[in-house]
Image 1: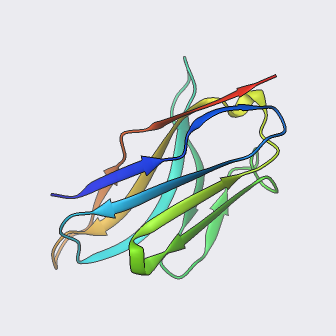
Image 2: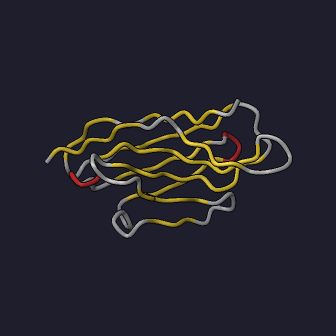
Length: 120
């Protein structure tokens, strides 16, 4: 059973920083793209950032220069360092991983979500 367990959300003032972590546990053969999405109240879930197993990254324009994604392949863990946070960053942040639990097809998995609230 594959699980993505997130941690690190919370309440922070505008201009502050938070670091999110997400660890993949369970039976894992290979982990490919990992990333973070977010969903604000009344809005659709949107891409924040992704990172491949080789370290190539992609960011939404709204977070470029403020957020940094990284991963530790040995620990099957992805991190999101969020700096210069703004009230509009308030959302539930979801971890995503595309992986193979066994040799064969890959599948997408989601974490349970962690709340990030930025006060003005």
